[in-house]
Length: 368
Image (cartoon, rainbow, N blue to C red):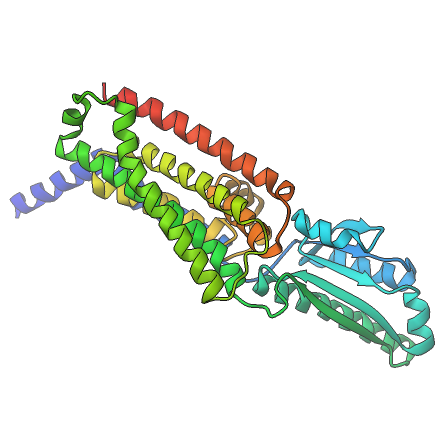
């Protein structure tokens, strides 16, 4: 029994000396419960909306106050022209626009009816449906207040319009998210494993003694996954268009360009992971935990970012897939001009340059 206790004690020493194991065992569950507890929520909160109110009367003012007071909405734009609606959606500034008819209060008190239009961004159909439902409930609540106050059957007539996805197909939101997840996982995970495999087997030093420079040896590891990812990109696009009936509304050239930029970013990230670990198992764990969870939870692929706590919104800003998915939604579904995705391109390019610089520098240091 004493020997049994000694072996247990030895195992504890081994585990406690391994900082990475301790990190996985004790810190990772805390991070997971926080992420899953706060990020996974189908409830949409603090959605940014714009209002076009040509009437500007007491009734529309009261409705705007109720919308602003709701935890679900934040009025960030007051439009002066109906023609601004299309551009403001393309810029990604808002999730929904509420349009009141002219002479709203006058029509309501004279005829008992007044028209209001709810225009939502259909590129994310689930979120759009939820927002329309929240807005309709606020309108109905105020309608009941007027009914109890004046004893007149007032009625708001909401017209619902889903931009870019009038049929509310889930594939319109699903396809960009899958593209972001597949490309980064294949490139980053497989590249890191391929390089670590050489280090683990002791053959990397043999490769470095060849006439090729180290940078070219690294490129020989990355190029096959670049080609495979490009094939995956073409396959996803063909299936999306011809099987899922998701149109490529924007420029195909810029769609492919941004995807290739994202692939290079993922390759750089895989190279960076390979400099931090020394085994294939560790590379898989690092890729799975560091990449998979943030992509699923913090990229906006499944859960609205606006509904998350501020700290998670800030963390999501460093998730590359968030900006890629957003750019693809704009180009592929909304069909915007390239100027409307300039911000996403700049962020992805900056991340790519940063990952590439750090990973190459660290890689040279480790192989000296």
